[in-house]
Image (tube, rainbow, N blue to C red; front, side):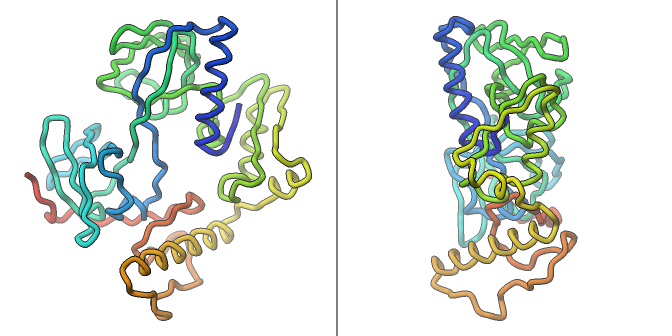
Amino acid sequence: MVSPANRERIELNLRIHKQLQREGKVSRVDHQIKVYVNRDMTGPERTFANAYRPGEDVIRYTNTSKVYKTKPGDYAKVIATNHEKNEITVRFSNGRKLIYDPKRLSGVSVYNEAERSFAEGDRVQIRAPNRAKRIANGELGTITKIEGEQIRLALDSNREVRLDLRQFRHFDHGYAVTSHSSQGLTFDRVLVNVDTRQSAQLVNDRMACVGISRARYDALIYTDSAENLRDTLNRSTNKASAIDATRDSLLDLRKELDKLRGDPIAPQQQPSTEHSLTQTPTHTAPAPTKAAELEIEGPELDLGLIL
């Protein structure tokens, strides 16, 4: 099943999991497991301290930084943010604290912890690559055994692997997947969930193409409105519309932030209407959209404070 929005994907997976338990196709013994769910923050959002949620967000570092003493695969939990200084405070598993401006440390992924009910027999999807186990992002498999902090998976690639939950929590139910994570997957029969009320950034011509083309033989579309379906799936995702959507989102959020600061946006501060995807945006507010990710990465400067 392909569903573009994460919220719908989670709800569909839960319902399918429970139904399979009722039918006896999945073990009725649930195991409550905390997993990491990608927040899908854009590049600009990751540079803005107030976009992070203390006590909830977990950061995975993918680059080496001698200044901040991080290396690929390090995890830290966000414990505080400072809006005025645009700084976040994180705590690593060894207890070390780090305060830094997120503009100065690129190459991160942001997750939040979520609790899921898994049972032996459940289908799961890997949500981040695991190089040590040679598992690709998006791979699917079936849980064959759950023992304490260990999960045994039978991957669709005909391999069996064991995951240590103390080291890897990037997986989720794999009955319904987003159109993005379904890329590269092929099935005999595919169900595509299309909510025509979703934004053009989520439901558009590209989503339709990706979702339907996952099927070898049969694809069925389930929608809230057959009347609006054609127009919804004909919405374009060309470069011009992506730039317009991103610019409008950035400007709207900038206005909201300026209201909070009591400093209304001045006309001369409004972003130019002529942008290309290679231009660096001049505004600092994040954009709550994935239409066009305009990455802002600054050099590593020694502006952090290690406690």
